[in-house]
Length: 513
Ligand code: NAD
Image 1 (cartoon, rainbow, N blue to C red):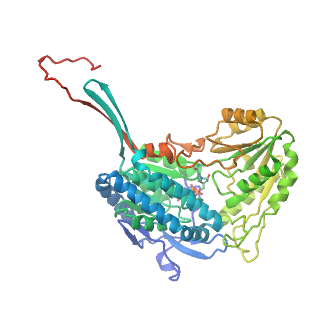
Image 2 (cartoon, rainbow, N blue to C red):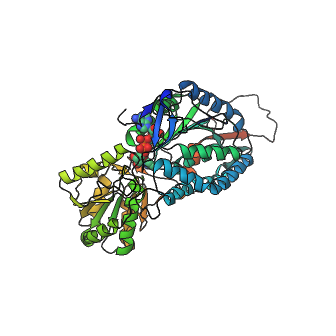
Image 3 (cartoon, rainbow, N blue to C red):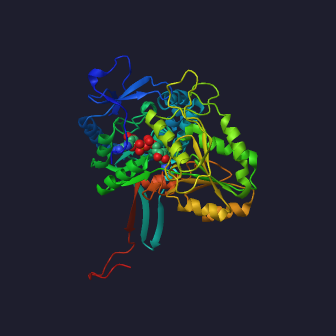
């Protein structure tokens, strides 16, 4: 499994005392880990040390497991209105503290301050949705015969584990713990070791909102922490979001241990440009959706398929992309932020080179970008590769950087063939003014989230995040109705209350009908 490079690790004796440590949150206490292994978390724009993130010890993680298991026994019995009240308080607190959470995100993760606020807001919407938990949990009842009723309702599972990616440090933990807790579960969240600050701030707000001790716990670490979540017997379900190789491993290990696992994986999202689309709107949408957050969104529109004559718009696309300002996330007017790490920058640059080597046309090259005052940051500027074909590495791999790869197709059918042959099914979008083209595309495209003139069609929380095929393992999606299903077990009761006394003394052994 261990393909990925984690952050630099230092021992306790090497810690610079002026740099804060990220605490664990176990049993309602924010505590310094006793570990001797700390990740160095550096600001992606400046390389300045922001915090040390511990790799929790096995004692600490086992304590979190025990505490969360114990807390479940009482939390599951709380009234539904108590849990609703906590969610109501939590959403108000997140709204009040949105700027502070966003500041932490920009500092640790690099995205622009405006984008970081969007990260918090999209998560907050899930908390707001979780405020309707009494309605969301309502079951069904049917009198199935004169004296017999069948009813079903949803019960919480136990402890839910969350293993989170770096790219949405507020939104994705907020996809998980509010709904899981509102359903009556307790939680152990392992945020990304690259930006755990937002989760810690959210845990503080959850405590303030009335989440009792032990109901929400936060551990930190790398592979050991992930294995702990996959193996601990109190953990009954795992919500994972991240890359393919970690996600497939977690799905396999978690399900082998009998746990329910939902694993959201990588993506390669195609935008299809029909020649009848509104040109200005389409070009602006493509630039925003490809280069926003430096392309580090799982729903980034990283691939464009120009149908027919729409490829003539490429020079204008390049002009618009050139206008974007590459800089640090707090600098006014920044459009393109740094990548998460120096390794990510190296990888993205080498994928750009692979495109060139394999015959793509490099129309805009963002390599070597060094914004003023932030020369050491992990920056790559907007990059556009045209005449890309399906066999090229820059097409087959998820780049996760500010690189737009452009393919050409003669017809909508050809574009559909390209998309449906791709391994991923997270998101796609068509730009057109033709209702029939949009309808054909919607019906025939084998992708779970479709935008019609909407570049990043991430559904609001009353729906679910429905990436498909290679972009998910597991059957139940995050948030919305399927999110509630994932965090609960359906129980069905069949009850008989006879009106008359039973007088017969003969038992029947046939299958009851
Ligand atoms: P990642 O897989 O590197 O990390 C995610 C989590 O897994 C982290 O908590 C990390 O500590 C852990 N992890 C990483 N490598 C591991 C290993 N070798 N063994 C055990 N655990 C490991 O992902 P990332 O780089 O943080 O996030 C970016 C990826 O997430 C992209 O591929 C993106 O498409 C994907 N993503 C998908 C969605 C979606 O909903 N489909 C949403 C956001 C991000």
